[in-house]
Length: 187
Image 1: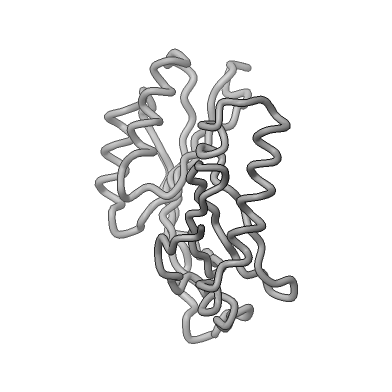
Image 2: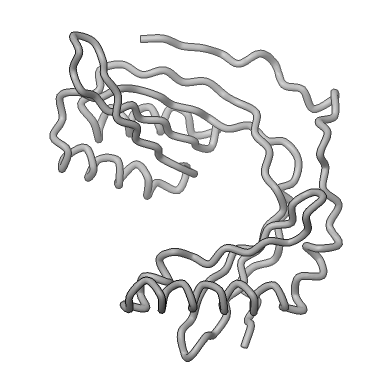
């Protein structure tokens, strides 16, 4: 059984993102994880990336990169200062492009698995099962791999994919959409 979860949205083309970056070298791993989870759960945040690095004085540090809604810039900056020990950060707006996608929910052996379907230029539709739904299966690797394969195949056979598959994908950036140069702010 395939059930339609959400309509495909027009994410093909270009959009602006807020990119916030900073380093933390004086916050415990547990506390930093808790703070980053709070940031990650904010509705304005699309992604939080944590990268181990070596900072000043050869200290081990975490480089944090946050991708967010640019209209929420002041809110995100305040949130970073509230949830981490950083005392300075950098931010800018950046152009990004995303492919059209939709999420299908399929039933495999009585389990609900969400599958993201994306149309790739020159390739066609591809599917990726939601990792959290596969982990809920509770079995070992082979069972999860089989569940993943079945869910992705079933989602790709969905009759609801016609809008996504018929969607025109914009692969060239129109000059009229060019934004002004990114603003850089340093500590």
